[in-house]
Amino acid sequence: GESNLKDETILQAEGTVSVPATKVNSDTQATLTIFWKDESRNKILYIRGFGRQWKTPEGIGVGTSLSGLREILGEFQLTGFGWDYGGLVNLKGTKLSKYRGKLSLTLNPTDENVYGKYPKQYGSVSGDIDLSSTNPNLEPLDVRVYQMTVNLGE
Image 1 (cartoon, rainbow, N blue to C red):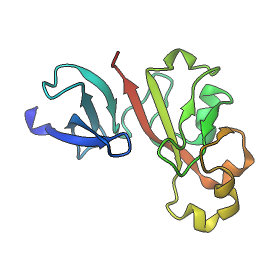
Image 2: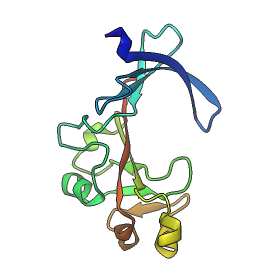
Image 3: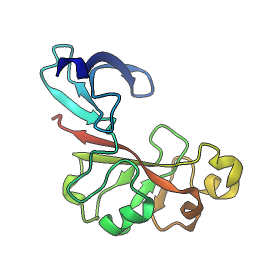
Image 4: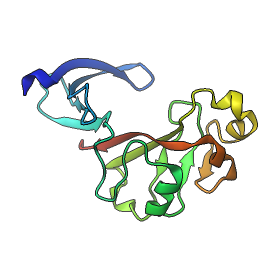
């Protein structure tokens, strides 16, 4: 119902672009955020901010572990952590390559103090670099899917 919807404007693209959005069921595991093409809110660009209830048909959702993702995708590439596009999974050449351009998965270590606990490992997988999902430095970091984006725009 309407009481479960909240319209707002969210900053994207490193805080340089304001995008109209609607949060749905924001206090539940069924939450998601719809990002609109413009203020008329007639055309969806993408959906993000999925709660843990949402999964792809293959079973991928927020909280899916790195090893669980490798079981579904096979080996894959991702970007290094610690920058705006860090942890982005490249679906090219995976079992879900058909979703390229439609589904984005972003991974992140679960521990907020990961650098303090694992400085060498975290430092070696950080920055504007491409990594293999089998990089041994990822293992102690408890890397999981922290964001899914479904692109419905043109």
